[in-house]
Structure formats: structure tokens, C-alpha cells
Image 1 (cartoon, helix red, strand yellow):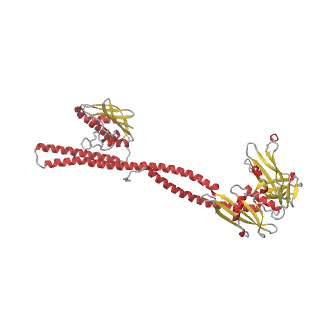
Image 2 (cartoon, rainbow, N blue to C red):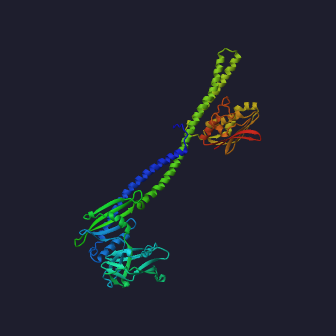
Image 3 (cartoon, rainbow, N blue to C red):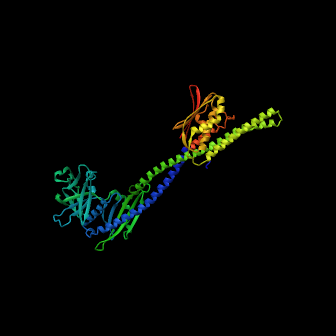
Length: 561
């Protein structure tokens, strides 16, 4: 059994547990995230590599890779669409480099794309590009409208745009160039109108487009450009492709020194989070039908925290709270257990100290009486001394027997029996031996009712006898002892000449006596402690009261099962 010399302190125990749990959780948290990050890095790298392999196959179109004239914008647009289709953690930037000249012939940076539709439907539309910065910044408020987004697709050189809306009144902004200036595969914008169009599921819901404004975007210098004013043939898409800030920041990671081989490089980038972002750089070789070789490079970035880490954290953080609560509860339970052990140890120490104190007085008296007997005094004195020795011997025997009985109960782990015991009938049997003394003192005894319980008959008889003995010992002359039983409780009470200065519940403790005298031989002071211990083992409630009602002092003990 544990032995405690210091009383446990709840806040210290809880603080220690929380500190250990916090350190353990941090170690587990960092370790799991580290493992998860590395697994995510491998999975993300493989995913991007697979996407790029698919892209190389998907754009296997000789027209796109001619590197001459209007075909380069088509490849630019193709790459831009690929990046636009990917979500937050997809491919951020793609470029195509001619291995022979080491020249970038196409990339996915944001641009404005214009289409000149041909009258002959069998022919593909001509595609032109220009720097998106040439478009007035006033247009960005329309393109970035939160209620509208566009998706693009391109197949065999043909581009289609689908507009999606997600508000109560579906609407989107449409741009229309009234005239443009073209040269080679480049174009410059002229006058542009902005209208607000409305989607309609039926003719009845159709609404005419709403004119917003006309903006003149014509540059100051258009020398060398062909001016086209047939606005019915002109279509424009602005802001397709990769964020230019990403290209500027991450473009430096692209390494043209390994363009002669296929490669995949994964780099950890510090983005302010604990583990940072995963940056994947890929390089794939493409050879066209004319044996011209190109390298298709890309970089892709993914934030571990926002892509996968939050899932793990969403599990770990509630788990930490649950473990924290369980730890606190376990700490409180542990505290109560240790407090109980400490109280038991303190109780035993008090018991031993009290017993030693109570044995010291009769032993000293017996020694004195024994010394007097050796002096050959008259027979009358000898008889007196012998009687005193016997009286003290009986007291010491009673004290030792009660201590042993109490210790035996403490270490007894067996379950109480299931005998049916009527405590009132037991009381009637036990009080008979005290009746001559009680009659001599003029004490009246009233016993009434019945209180039947289940338990160990011998132990319950001992407990009731100790209650009766306590009542007989402290009842005043011409007083009253009353014992009542009912379905709910057993009560024994006695009148007394005085009440103790201590609280009534203190009388349950060992060596505490009603007359507060530790040096007399008026009982061992263990009777009530033994009785309460027995009742506690049977899971009965034991209550004690000291009352003064109408100038009558009364001790009352109530037992409830």
C-alpha cells in the first residue's frame, strides 16, 4: 500500500499532468505532421508529375508546336487554360522552351486573348495575344466580380468559354471590342464596351443586356498595326492563366540547365507556416513530327497547412481537448485516491498516538499501585490497590481489543453478508444487560418499531451494541434512551447532562469522547468509530446530532440504508 507523508495538493497534481500532456502532445503533433508532410510531399509530387505527363500527351498537336505565326498564341492559350482549370493546389505555371535555341516559345502567364472569327466555319479562328496591362484597370472590377467566373476549354485549336453565375439574379459582364490593331500574332485594343448580361432558362425570362460603359483603350502608338473594325468577328478573353506575381517569384526556380533530360524537383518553400509549402518543378521532353525538341517546364505550389495539414489538425486539436479533459478528470480521481490514502495514514498515526497516550496513564497508575503493594501495607489498602490494578487492566484490555477490532475492519476487504437483520430486535436483546444499571440510575428506555436490513449479522450486532453502550455511558441520571425503527431509518437517542464543545461529526473519530476527557477510563473512545466503520462497509449513511431543545440536551444517531 502507498504511504504518504505529505498531503496531496490538487493544483500541483493537475499542473504536472497538464505540463506532461502538453509536452507529449507537442511531440506527437510535430512528429505526425512531419510524417504527414513528407507523405503529402511525395503524393503531391507524383500527382503533378502525372498531370504533366498527361499534358504532354494531350497537347500532341503539330500545329501548336510550329513555333511560327499565329500558332504560338494557341499554345499560350492552351497552357493558360491548363493553369486556369487547376484549383488552388494545381499547376501554377507552364512554359515551353525550344531546346535548340533555348528560347521560350510559349507560357501560361496572364494575357488578353482575342479571336478573329472566320466566315468559313471549316477554318479555325485566328488567335492573337497582348499584354493584359494594356487593358484599363477599370475592367478588372468586372472580371473579378464575385458572382461570376469563367471556364475555358480548347480542343483541336477551337476555344470555347462558359460563364457561370451563382447569385439570386444571375448576371455576368461581357466585353466587346469595337475595333482592334493587329500585327503578326499580337493585337492592341481599341474601343471596348462593357455590358451586363443575364442568363435565362427560357424565353420568358430573357432580359436585354444592360449597357455599362464604353472605354477607349487605344494606345498612343499603333504604327505598323492593321486596323480592324468588324466588331462582329472580334471576341476577347482577359485575365486567363497564371498569376503574374507567382511567375515573377517562382520563375527563378526554373532551371534551364537540365532541359536535355526529364526531371522532377521538389523543394520546401517557407510560407510562414510551420512546415511551409511544397514546390514541384517538372521538366518533360516533347518531340514533334519534324523531330524538333521542346522542353515543357512547370512549377506547382501547394500549401501543406491548407491542403492537408488542416485535416490532421482538425483531428488532433479536438483529440487534444478530449485528452485534456480526460487527463483533468483522471487527475481529480487520482487526487481523491491519494487524499484518501493520506487520510488513512493520518488516521492510523492519530490512532497509534492516541492509543499510546491513553495506555500511558493506566500503566503509570498500575506501576504506582504495584509499588505500594510491595511495601506490605495493611490488607485493606492491598485490596484497594489490587482493585485499581484490575480496573486499569480491564480498561487497557478494552482499549487494545477495540483498536484491534477497528484495524481488523479497516483491512477487511470481504463483502458484507446478506443476512436479514432487524436492528430493533438486536437492540432489545443487547440492552437487557444494561437494564439493572439503568433502573438504578432512573433512566427510562423506550424501544419501538422495526428496521430490517441486509448485512453481516455479527458486525451489525457489534455496531448496534457500541451505539447502545455509548448511549448508556453518556445518558444523564433520570434521563431517557429512545430507540425507533421505521422502513427508512434506525434512530437511537439519549438525553445528556451537557453537550460537547466540538462539532457532532467529530464524535465519529477515534478517541474523541462526549465528555472530552482523554485521561479517564470512561470507555476507549473507539465505540462510535467502530460502529461507523461497520455501517460504512454496509454502505449505510450514519448521521449524528447534538441538540438542545426546550433546555434538554440530546444526542441522536440515525442510520439509513
